Length: 164
Ligand SMILES: Nc1ncnc2c1ncn2[C@@H]1O[C@H](COP(=O)(O)OP(=O)(O)O)[C@@H](O)[C@H]1O
Ligand SMILES: O=C(O)C1=C[C@@H](OP(=O)(O)O)[C@@H](O)[C@H](O)C1
Ligand SMILES: [Mg+2]
Image (tube, rainbow, N blue to C red; front, side, top):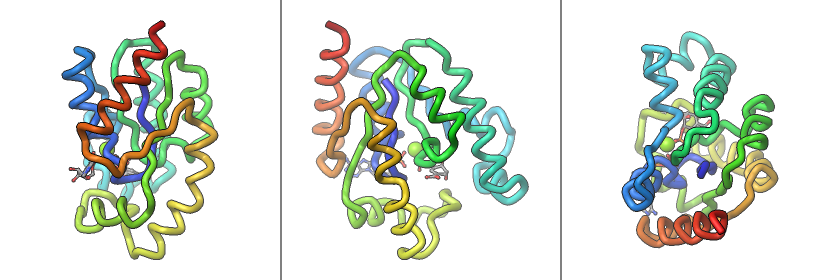
């Protein structure tokens, strides 16, 4: 299962709970990029720009291949066409974690680890730009403004559907 959605939708958090329940490993693409680059995300953005980060994120996604796991993507993975194509070609459900902007912004506004979290207006513009891309890239959409446990239950239900 591949989790997509805006920053703060809980992809990294719920991937871990889901992995415990499904007994599958987690791949958090941000962590893979950091590991493969030997640099923090902020450092990659500073030295290589967002374009460099997207290429590294693509390489990390490409390495997932067909391994059975829970993938927590970074919120911008869908903005890079080669990564979108990879997502499309992976034979696992892609789930979009959706919430309204205020819910997400409250979760991320004080976290300095995300270079694209700038002013509220800038982050809101990014959210508006990306909404339709998430929807067109996903097989399923769930509301992630509920508790982590509730979100995980919905994801478990989706994983059951696809197994039949
Ligand atoms: N369902 C939820 N309800 C409340 N807070 C959440 C929920 N999911 C995630 N969070 C919190 O939001 C922040 C961002 O979560 P994270 O998993 O890093 O999101 P993402 O990987 O999608 O950017 C974290 O502080 C996390 O604890
Ligand atoms: O939305 C984005 O462009 C980004 C989201 C981040 O991941 P999370 O969605 O896990 O915060 C991380 O990949 C990077 O800061 C860029
Ligand atoms: Mg994350």
